[in-house]
Image (tube, rainbow, N blue to C red; front, side):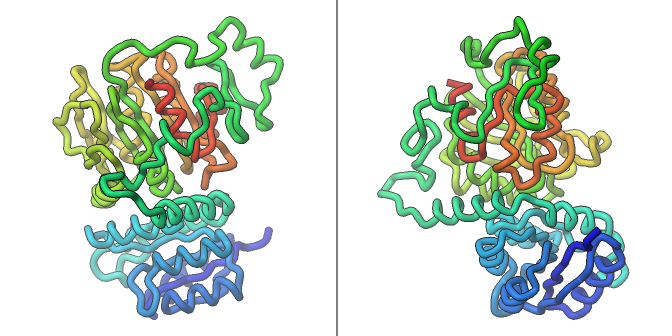
Length: 403
């Protein structure tokens, strides 16, 4: 099997050498080059054509975020950031993820020489996933976010004025029939080619033909969005385009503590509603988005009270979307809406099963638009997804379900 070509970028000679040795020791990779700053990284990415890049942020001449943006726009190569585990480092990391980086790994604390081995497994697994990520989806995401940032707005207009429920979207009757979108009957499972087998067609017989055939019961709707690898950039497109009239929003992104606060801050600057990191003790309210805090599970209890717990990780992650989705399904029943976006692993699939069992609705991002089609695939294969939609139509589909 061909070894994956890796480029290591860091302004520290020690870190370049340490990371290169760590990566080269894995038989899946070969380190084809090392760069000491962002400008050199862009040049080497052109000449060496790596499959994946390990990228520092703070570098002379060109920082990691801008280097990532240039590299991704040209080639769509997967980039994994090595980030300082500080508030400033978290903000920088979110900027790089928005610029097209697929994932990040916090640098070890203390003396790096003594602790570099602590990040070995995480770095290698994320580099491998980034090398196999959907390059076209990475590039499209950067182009959309850059385009949104470049569009001017009139005085008093929110930057995300092209709302899912307004201009720029097709009529709701067209949603679910556009390219890349599929609507399933409840309990129906998609095959690898998006078609049902005879067994699946038979098992779906007698079930409602469409999840939108009957309106949701009155009362607060609670939307839960789950994401992992590629999630921050996807969330930056989806969350600001939502209308939270009669709805509360919970976001579960697989991130460490500190980074989720930076994510909430980033989304808050773009969204026309309140976005903040959950602290525990809040009550779910209309027009408010809470981001699950890193290193804690977020559960919703009776009365809509939010509780953070330190129970063991699920699927190796904390926060886990399955925990949040199950609790929301138990409290809100048919007023729960679960959405699974791009990400590695299976988190969210069992949570969507709980939402469906309680009478709620579910969406999953399409393979074509996912940076990593792991979590959405798991949910689709479990047969608990009502609709599969391209990323640019996710917000519109959510708005239609809650309206």
